[in-house]
Length: 188
Image 1: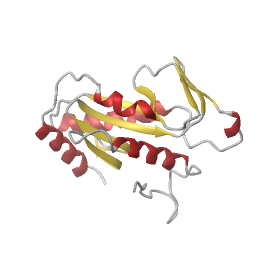
Image 2: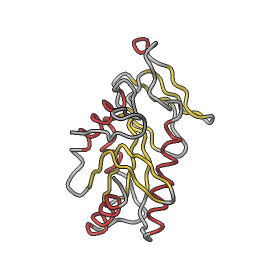
Image 3: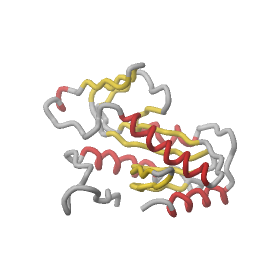
Image 4: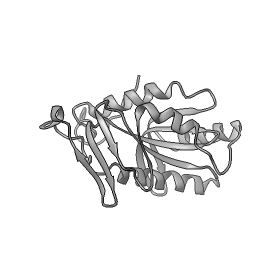
């Protein structure tokens, strides 16, 4: 079962309170990642520390073709990726519902995630492709355009996208295990 660790706020308050949308999206993504294959290591809900910062990752996948950090979004409606950022038009059924916190630009969070992982890898002299993905899990979501820096895709394309990524350098099974251990050792 996928659970989100509590952080910040009064005892028992979750910092990521968002009407359950975030958790629902993360559960859907975790379910899809069960089918990725034994050569991949999958970590969920990790708070990784490096470079003087800490970031909470929905999912990290380590495999022979790189390290993938995935942010799950359970948004509906049209999501437009433009040169100015992200514009979201909710579907009629979702109008009036509260957005999840910081929902204006999911790529900003991925830049912070990428910084922490790059610092961790630099500190330990690890060379591996690092790929950021925003995974949209709501069935009534329509993506228009793409992010210039990160993959933006719907849930049904996630495993295919990861497995077909062409790395600059392939990682051995021992390197995959070592990177997984490094991330676990530097996270909660």
